[in-house]
Amino acid sequence: MSEKTKLNAVSPELDIATPNLDELETGPWPSYVSGLKRLAASDAAHTPMMRGVIGTLEQSFINRRGYWKGGTVGVIGYGGGVIPRFSELKDDKGETMYPAALEFHTIRIMPAWGNHYNSKLLRDMCDVWEATGTGLVAMHGQSGDIMFQGTDTTGVQVAFDKFNEMGFDMGGAGPAVRTSVSCVGAARCEQSCYDEGDLMRATINEFLDDLHRPALPYKMKWKFSGCPNDCTNAIQRADMAVIGTWRDEIKINQDGWKAFVADKGMKHVVDNITSRCPGQCMDVAEDSTLTIDNKQCVRCMHCINVVSSVSQQYVGKDGDAILAQGDDKGLSILMGGKRTLKVGDMFGTVIVPFMKLEDEDDKERFLEICGDHVDFFAENALEHERSGEMIERIGLPAYLEGMDLEVDPQMISEPRQSSYVRMDGWEDEVAKWEERKSA
Image (cartoon, rainbow, N blue to C red; front, side, top):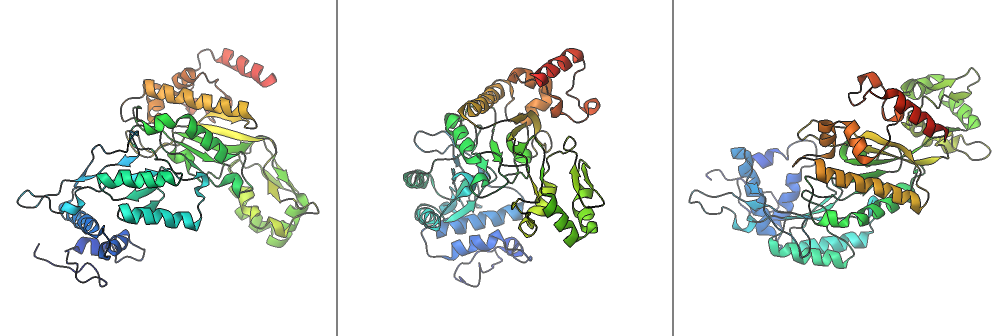
């Protein structure tokens, strides 16, 4: 290259032309390029690899093409968990332009549920990766894994052995069950409707073989959110979203509510709470008494969220929050969320409107539903097809029939606009639903 640009002011001895990457550091926000340059400017063993990665990335911007290809890299006894990357970048003579960056593999490590760490553990992990890889860590990837980015094939096994000694297992990669994510939930959040960590651990243990040894048409993952706030973004990003909810009435502390209205004013209440209720089920009387038509409530959590941050200022004599979830708590299961692939972005569709999770029998029933889906997905999905795309292709009635799940009116909101509703045998289905309802 004729044009030379210093890598950065800290290390002028590193002479790599990176005008395109330099441009990415000029904006108002922190740039990942700066982090790569800091690693490339150190005197650690991984410095040559990081310099090669920066040079390869610059060439990708110049030529508008990627130079990393996949391959097969793993650790002993596992079929997944590593994202292999081999460089195809050659110089004019056909030789590898950056030999030190010929391999740049990423190891996925499953985190603790709720992403609980202490500072010593984080330091120990960083020490392992600085000794065996580049020191580049992403916490966390979209699958929830801790992403240890950048090592050669030998370093993959060495690093994993050390992480495994610390009590961590390999995460998912490839056409397999992927690492699951749960919110912090019951450990710290008063909105939790079930024990997210326990259910996530039980689910992963049940399907661990499907995670470590890819044998599915494409990836499949769970995410566990303790309430409809969905802090794990499960409905949008998980094949099976598990969302905590309740089915009785929202609890109202009328004394606290009236104090809140008196302090904030009715305009604030209308502008920020009642007018933004998607079910339009809230009514405030002249004396500021609040009434909620719970049959119209969609459990969106908006009203509870608005008042929860100030509830302690207006608590009644019993110390109750202004608004709180009901006591009959459980979870809903939605299927089919994902980002863009063959079909555009999709949200999950409700397949189980509500189920309790109070004992081992309830947990076993949940795991049975999960196992039915994994089996159905393995047998019916096309290669490189997510669960939502499979359901879109075969139709929800066929999926529910294959899963042996009863159709429930709560699965839909507008029957005449829902393409998966079949009207043949409608009276029989209504009769069966009425029978279940009265049981």
